[in-house]
Figure 1 (cartoon, helix red, strand yellow):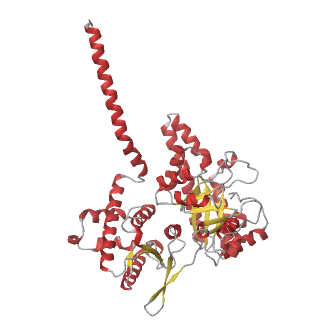
Figure 2 (cartoon, one colour):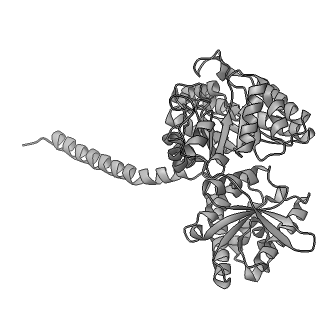
Figure 3 (tube, helix red, strand yellow):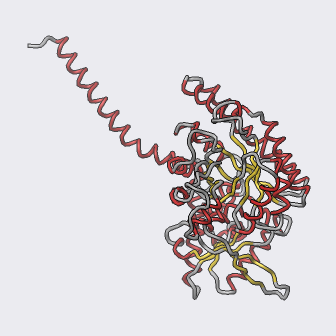
Length: 474
């Protein structure tokens, strides 16, 4: 026989067990939602507006497809900020005019220039929520628009019918145009250049590219001579490799060789030198001004030989990033927030300084950010990707090649989960011929490797010239 006290204990215990079970069930139910939220890159309000505009564009294209003789869909590339006609209103008018001319020729077109036209439609013909969404979209950063068009292009109802991209004149070096170019090359779809004929008609010239080499950035970072760099640049130009990557002091050399070719001269900035055997020592503490000095040296080198385009690969402040993570784990949230902001500020200052200087020299510049995945655990890699996503960088890049390991499929998948389609993803560090297709399937758009010659030979069914397989390096 139990006493009243013991009976009370039993009741309390049962209630605690019941509460514990309910808490566990709630956590299990909430877990999938939390994972879904992690995949979402934007606030609920922006996601809602993205969904509305995406749905409108898909319905519009499907209606156009039903009325057209051909079901083939073409994407019109040409960001409104650099469509080749100067001012924003002029670019919008020109883009809309080209869209109509392509449709008159019988093509079904996905056109970024059409979103703004929603605001010119009578209110009775446009859903009020859609009009409000488009109004708010005028204040979106550029990266959100890139996400929108990638979602439209990869919509299950449209993707099988997308047959290529039409690129407007003078938009080839803008950030958006470079991203779109990489999308279609990764999908192995044709790219056409739009040309005015002068008699009111136009022609589309198909761009020839190798579906693999056009995504590879040929890398030569070890100490070498100008003659060797020049020889490699000529080879990269001949094979139409996407880019050639060297140190800042060699930019004038490759810029002179590549200035009239599609291969983009690229420089690393704030990069390790041969004396650093492994990532994780002094090079993580490269001051922002040193990175800007490297960027200036690269831009001056390109401008001095008449080049008009280059890219810069900068390293994130890994040291500050890891300090922020330690502060976060130690419960010092305010300090962690301050340090994470410092990491982003370092990127923003370098990009802003490089773009301002390049503009004054008549050069277009885009920046990729290396996060050095070998030094980061998964939560910190996600945080680094979030930071890069919110900057004006063209791409996020895995490694320098100086760490204990290079790019992995898991690294690429984590980056893709975080940045979505807002940034290109470049895999580098240990990339070779057998590894490249796996990284490509994981979501990488670009590939940095020093074994490009061996890759080219393997694509032709030949054996590498050197003994042993190329390790890729970088």
